[in-house]
Amino acid sequence: MKGLKGKNVLVTGASSGIGQAIAIRLASEGCNIAINYRKSPDGAEDTEEMAMQKACGDVENCGVKSLLVQGDVSKEEDIISMVNTVVERFGSLDILVNNAGIQTESPSHEIETVEFDRVLTVNLRGAYLCARETIKQLLSQNRSGIIINISSVHEIIPRPMYVSYSISKGGMENMTKTLALEYANRGIRVNAVAPGATVTPINEAWTNDPEKKAIVESHIPMGRAGTSEEMAAAVAFLASDEAAYITGQTLFVDGGLTLYADFREAWS
Ligand code: NAD
Image 1 (cartoon, rainbow, N blue to C red):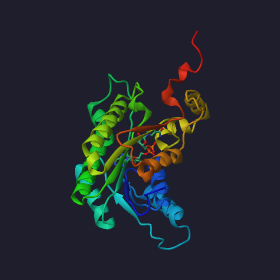
Image 2 (tube, rainbow, N blue to C red):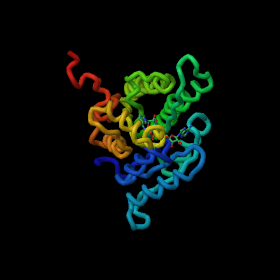
Image 3 (cartoon, rainbow, N blue to C red):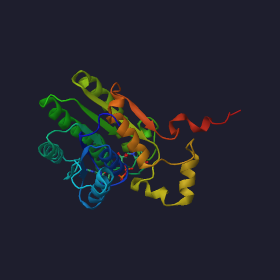
Image 4 (tube, rainbow, N blue to C red):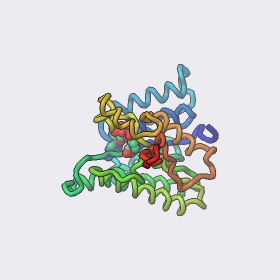
């Protein structure tokens, strides 16, 4: 896609699921990719191998670079050092993809404060601090740049039993718009991709159970869950020059989930 070749990218939480697919897709578009992982590098190493295979095939040193970067996005010091490492190794950071995210299930009147804080600290504060550090770097180098936040359909659809998750993604919408407005005249575009139900490890509770999967998919107008690659395609578009005039938007990639599926048939 236009404008992606040679861009330096950081994808948080890129050792599995949607983040892994984003890193692979952007590498295949010729981006240099920094692959963030929280603890064990195992999944991140798989991401790197698949990404470099897509980018280079059997050609050695095809010009696409990769970097594994450890960092827990709930820790400010990790985020600062992660962004600095990417800039030291690649020379700049052009595209940040805030993908790392967690969810916990609990009735809203019973959720432990520490659990509530943990979800907000990873999903919202972590994404904000990564954006802040990236914007600092972009401004100091007088470069244009792109931030893409991986939100969720629960940015707008309330999700009982997951109030911290819903709040984090609702907050992400405002963060996307606020940062987009604040930095639009400095060449920094900020957008979000909001996946619907997607087959990834975060959803193992239903993806590995055919009966539960069928129930989930019965609520989706297009009749099936999405794939990580479909989410990555939307990220690649928003990161490319094809989306040069788009900022402050959330692109829902959800098979129609946000279209009020219960209205498919007339009620009376
Ligand atoms: P996933 O569990 O495979 O990916 C989440 C990634 O975030 C993992 O690699 C995990 O290690 C990483 N992570 C978690 N805490 C972290 C931390 N503190 N620091 C660094 N990394 C951390 O699940 P996924 O479905 O690929 O989720 C990716 C994003 O997509 C999340 O933000 C999630 O909310 C969002 N999303 C997913 C779905 C879905 O149906 N799968 C739907 C809507 C939104």
